[in-house]
Image (cartoon, rainbow, N blue to C red; front, side, top):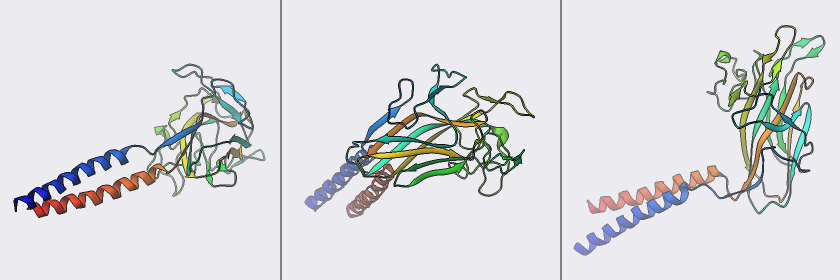
Length: 266
């Protein structure tokens, strides 16, 4: 009886130790390699189809804020080659939306439609990662929201909207921080810009990639434009969500083993 008890205790201790080991192992982030990073504070290379750099009028607390832009309608591409072996790619960046983005608006003024103002991101030969509208204040709202419960970074825009439509600047990390202004027949020098922190992970195995950032439906650059900052591209063998799922599955199985051993001891 004593031998059997010691053997059961040993198995229970082994299960607890294994549980701890697996928890430590799977709680570590999936291995990822950064293959590209650029904050546009220096020279921009030929990897970009358009390497124009602008300076935001309002310096942030880190100093002058340089970014890739300003851009209007059309596509700006990032081309990367000789990527290491991988199964998934993650692209992260700051999206600057400048001046009077009109989101879902379809109003026509003097024969010129205000919108809809679309922003897009796709992988050449691969998935469309984002195709949505953004508004910097037009009450018609926007299609983009990171989640159904997200709110605008400008509390004044948090009004009740129709299903599938979100308030201007919903999900933005910054409102009016870049220092851009807009004037029309109604307002003069009104602060108008927003910043979104976006990240997308998708299956990708090729040794090269072409990312297409773009916009359509915009008016002139003096009216509506956009830019990019803090662009980072990472590749990994597995996506983070997969490792989280493995963590949950493994821990549930080990917890079951530990519980069975406790019942035997009882």
